[in-house]
Length: 154
Image (tube, helix red, strand yellow):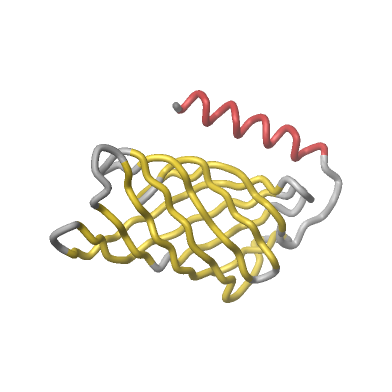
């Protein structure tokens, strides 16, 4: 898995270097990888200014396969050098699937998105406090993820 991740990162970085455009923030459809909890796997984001639809399809470290979906809003921005960094908040729901579908979580991700200046690429980090809902109980939940997205239509 680590080798596949490294190859994907190297390919995207190689393609990104060819681009001569300047980006403040990538909008449109982004595709990449996310590692963490509640869901690790293929990450997707569709952005329109400060508002974004988000999703991750993959697996959960506690259970089998999982899917996460929701929305995100960029609250504030600053910069590191000339590259923008955004503080964002959202609302997501995640569901685990496998032998039994008995776990559902509701989260309020708080994170940072860093957009590369010379490529349509986003690096992100998020903390995801929330609750996990089982078929017979509810408990607090805390997760986090780190990942990257490459925006295809820029």
